[in-house]
Length: 402
Image (cartoon, rainbow, N blue to C red; front, top):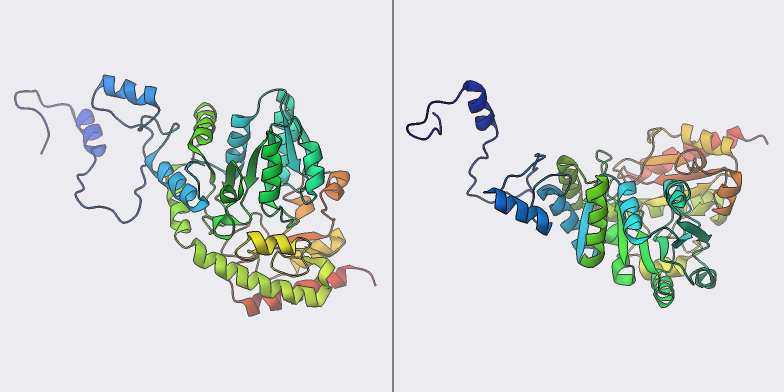
């Protein structure tokens, strides 16, 4: 059976194979999952329509510019963030890069929290600095220090819960001060997720997420997102068009799958993390454990006001690198790997992984000790995790001379 018009010679086999293999099926029923639009290109009805779509920047022509599955992911994340619009990226760092590149120019200055992800600091110091963008680092828990740095700044960059020290910043207070000084506010909300906190609703202009983490939740996809008002997201999308950081269709599909269970997972992550943090606090003392859900957290009052729950991240300070590495190797449940926000519990030595770019002075300035272990609490049974962490602590004690 062919679609050849009457009277036209039958086309060759190669031509018919290509046409047959790329013909979309007719679907009358509505799918209950977002389809994976695994196509690099999209066709218009005629050349004039195609030109109009490209000129308008709406619709679909080439998947580097946009893709329906990516659009669905961006819209879903933006809705959860309480934002007007969004764009989906191939990684969290791609999202951060595009958000910053859309807002700053040569000669601008960024004020950033000193407690910031290592790759973000590298982006600021090694990439944006080369193009004439200066960065001033501040203690974001000191509102007066932030205010003192803001005059003349283009942008204030924050993390809702910092990586890896778990500092919680007062977003409404800092956003108000930044806007009064004429600066925009960008917040990395990865450690919290929009289930625990929505920075847009607290005064941020743009929010970025590494969707690799809690949003997707299974450590099987790399993705990111930027959400905010349409006028700013349009500028972010324009950067992506030129730099090519859009999320792949299948990756977007996996993030959407994860988002559907985000609240259920985050409740369980938070409950287990709190139990584990209480166990660690009883074993090591309050100064050695940092968790936003504990009363001993340095910003406990802010955390209680801004966060739905304490989240799935905690930090343990075992003082020395030897103790930290022995603790990690003494654990049986977590794999020795990177990342966070997974169904599996993950423990990493911050100084040699997430903040490997920092020298000793930078680590100290960021409040990261040589013995700091960042723990992303998974969905395993809490009793198993407590027992495993107890074994890890025993290994850490054995590694330190009496």
